[in-house]
Length: 139
Image 1 (cartoon, rainbow, N blue to C red):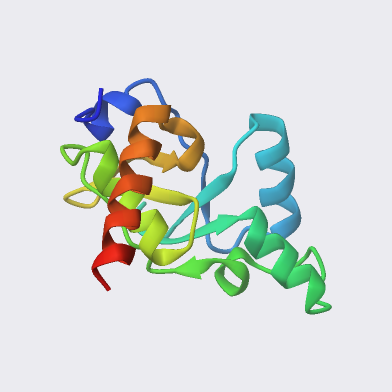
Image 2: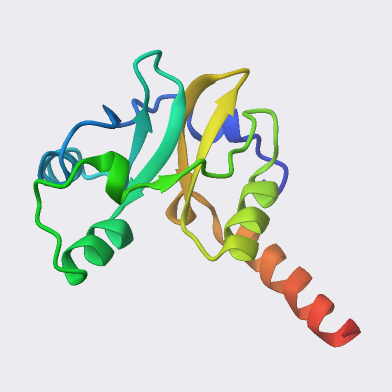
């Protein structure tokens, strides 16, 4: 279970993908309808250029910007990505180190999907906690 490949985890996923000129309102509405925690933002060639999450929506609204703001202004640009052949623990490490909960899965420019912390099993989370605890003790 600890060595699950990300491609296996997202095998049936249909990620929510939108163009950068879409609005925060449209993205939030689509996220609610699809029960998705993020939107993968793409350019005109369908290449990943950013990710938009609920945290981004809160940041935009708290800054006084309205729901008509384009995703290009609200997204996190150039997000870290993982390859579908990487293991679950690799994605968890990236999320933990970066302080975020979603990581796009991309291979040679092709978007496979996105993994979130909720996609992982208890043993995978436990292993990350063990690794972080060991790292703390070493410091």
